[in-house]
Length: 182
Image (cartoon, rainbow, N blue to C red; front, side, top):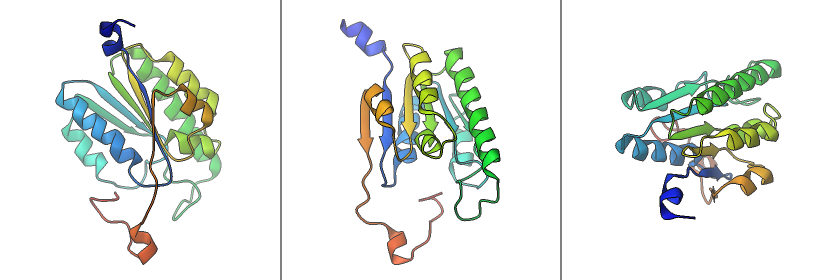
């Protein structure tokens, strides 16, 4: 493959595993890319109804960075009061948005945040994720986050990083911290 082609080809990057840092790593790519003037889109498949810092900080990176929180929040935990159908509808809508945004070809990087978890919860089919990967323009890099990355997604990726939890403050009874966890 000629060097020029290799430089212009987008990658498929997967951040997975039980440790913290998957979305944070994707946001690190976004921050770096915006610094180079690249266009970045991020669709959050699970997060959506709670407040977290990215909602405000992402606005500071506009117009190069667009974040869409399409989910209904974490499924079946803490204060989730939505029927599963609401989560399924939100995930279908997030998929539709992702297809539209990717097909427009305006993004250098598209982040599909927590889409692996959406597959695990059966809100999204793994085939849908593979179709998004196959449909991406040559120049576009797709970043896929979330625990439980399916083997087929790992096989389709160029780079896979597994976050491994060694120690967590929650084990000591320390709750999530503003600015660190949300």
